Image (tube, helix red, strand yellow):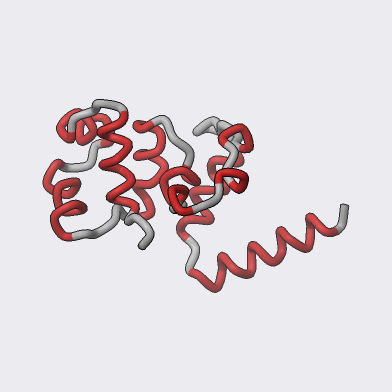
Length: 118
């Protein structure tokens, strides 16, 4: 069974030896909300993902994908690009995260078609 995003967050907190209190302070997310993720088995809202990744120093891919159940050849840390928070690319990712599922699929189709034009 795939891990919940919240379970991965706690895994990374443990790996980085970061307390829940420190994580709450650094992300601006209340401790009670963070506790609820574990207690209620819920996940953080989409608008918090980039903040969480920044504080944990991980990529959104690492947080969102169930990498423990993937073959290692499908996951290469070197494939990721660090994107500056003030860049156009970062803004595009944030916008993508606000889209509903249909809009995301349309955008992904458009991007795929653009990639095929090379």
